[in-house]
Length: 341
Image (cartoon, rainbow, N blue to C red; front, side, top):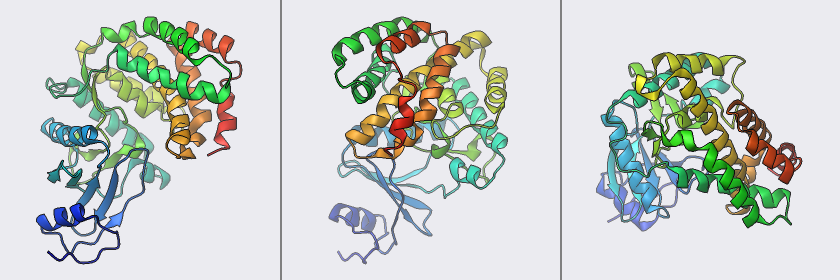
């Protein structure tokens, strides 16, 4: 079988996979890499992307499974045209280039984009079948494992002589108590990375289908407020003044009654925001030290400020006090780390 030369060097499995789908002559253009192990190539004129992920078969399978599930819920995840899990390849729908991030950089109406994203979350959290899919539970063990990334990656960067095991044991003990309200939260599908780089505007689709969803393979079932916090307290950008509160009010006005009262939802929102920011403080160091991806360090000053604000809003004074006593200057460390990006 002869496959026409491509601008992107093809592995034999990729060449065979494309030929099997009648795309031997297709041009391939690589897309910029992100923090994940997956890679994507655009097939111009075909409306498709070649997705390759040979290192994470679990994540690959979850992407295919969740893409189909989200489409069944009436949301816009990429259609899967073909897949071969044995080699980690898939042909998926190409949503184009209108990510929220690019649109915002070009001056698109910020409030309109965020309203669409919030409405998408309301649709997801209101759907009776949202959690009817095989994904891990976002339970206490997983939440604590993420909190421990702060201990194992951020703390050594700031305090190399710290007894990490001792610090982590104490840190997790405080978080165990803090996370109790999450155990009573109604379970829904949580996409985990619901932010401007993973959302796209599909202007030819009606309603919430106009919000294209990307990078949801780490989805879990748990408290939906996590995705709301991911959207409205984004590590990558500051929202316009007052916009976070407007979007919170929009969500609260439409959230299903099963989620509880406004105060209960808001408390979970701030609690999940604090947990997420804590994870990211460690995650971004891990990306630099383990994966040689220092670019995310530029977000550290914002995340440190967001973490402290969320801890305050959630009333997590025990955690703030422990950090102040154990890691003096932890908030300001982000500024120094940002210079390493």
